[in-house]
Length: 431
Ligand SMILES: Cc1cc2nc3c(=O)[nH]c(=O)nc-3n(C[C@H](O)[C@H](O)[C@H](O)COP(=O)(O)OP(=O)(O)OC[C@H]3O[C@@H](n4cnc5c(N)ncnc54)[C@H](O)[C@@H]3O)c2cc1C
Image (cartoon, rainbow, N blue to C red; front, side, top):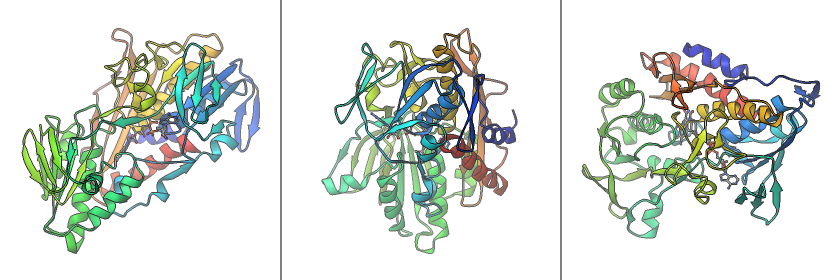
């Protein structure tokens, strides 16, 4: 599949799994919604992020009016992590990256409950909310994203609070933006990358590039340095493009592989690692990830090492708890933890649930794809793409063709295409 096809793929709202056949149609807003397609049941979705919002929308769009979908999300709106690195450099605002759930309810008839799920009762098939109420389900989809391990931090509470990850867009993004803005040409920005798996494999290297670019473009900070301390033995995505960026475009970046953190002294800005000690004015430390708390609170669901949810990728049903499906970053699969993949997994899951509610078999050969554009400067970008297909021998999603392809260059055209890709992905998820 060619890179340009991904844009069309998304804009058409195409299913990466098999599209459920429509029954009678009725108009919901300007969207043609199916009537009853023979799929009947209550589906509760936990988490209104990239995965949860997409599955809620497509369950209604493909399942029709017999599928009652309730989305439980504590926040009234969603802030995109994608492009949040551009907030650090002042090219975007968090407001511009904020998406509301109005369309989901008005166009697609999803019921929104602005609360958190605090417990799951798989035997009674119900979830408990933070106000003490309960929601029964026939099928449950859990899409809570990630949680972070604690970092080995020392120092005063005030200084520790300055060591942020900004790996979940929101208040920490604003804090990191202010800290970067306050830097001078004599200062160093330290970015630490956790061991994989973490969300958005190219994301930390992208952040190093856009921060290095910003520091070079601003007179007050020209000469400031960026040090990348990677717990992994090497760059985890787009190796050729990032090696080129670090060596030739951003000479103010020092990349240190195999640098696992032993301690961060927040008072002195010293990061002690297995590769030595490094001192910086700003320490942006991304902790190791695990699945969202609602998964790790339930040892049965956290079947992949107690940290991630093991699933059957034909339907994303838990491999330990029936009628519960887990999608997005929280699921342990061979696919990367990324928003584009979360959207694709959600469609495979929605299609599978619609078939299961009709008493039919699920698609035996689903496909998903990942396309990721990476800003390298404020005007240029690179990209990677990969298409996955279900492999019945291993029971996993395996890359097709040549596997992961990366762009043969870093240029302005990619930057333009990146804006369209982002707009299409967010429309397919929230509009
Ligand atoms: C800096 C950065 C850049 C990125 N760039 C890209 C990119 O270019 N391309 C790409 O594809 N991906 C990118 N990503 C990754 C992408 O953001 C994630 O992979 C994606 O958001 C995962 O979707 P998700 O639905 O699993 O989790 P999320 O989007 O995090 O959504 C989880 C939702 O669940 C809710 N929730 C959690 N617990 C509960 C509960 N108990 N009850 C109710 N609701 C709950 C949360 O409030 C949240 O809204 C980037 C990430 C970062 C940090």
